[in-house]
Image (cartoon, rainbow, N blue to C red):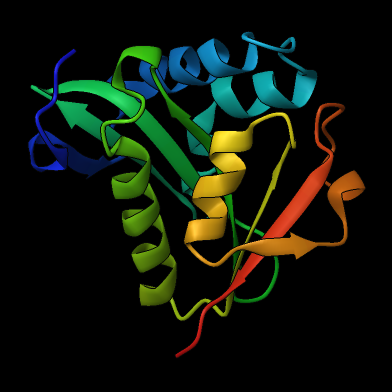
Length: 161
């Protein structure tokens, strides 16, 4: 995929036609270093029940109508959302998809009067950790509470009104 700039990327909310892409995009990045865990399967196989039907949203980055990236916002306590399942396919990385997804997800949380966005990750994902830092996420306690074996860092972003 060749992108001249992020202008060619469109961000759209979840639609059932993107269900397989949600699974594939996440499986791709996870299996680069780890194996899918039960919690991954539970979320990825039924994103409606685990995300959209409980008040969350899933976003997709599209190029020429094809999904090349995704992220989810999952309710995570009072006025708090978890940024989860963020993935960009290998051929689209470094082209602005992650930034566009982050912008949309954070704006979505703000529009719901959220006070905080949290996430979990792994320090081996240096480019992801760097991206989160650029958006103001800072390390927070509680990495062990997310239910993933691979998680070794939790981060949060306080949304100033």
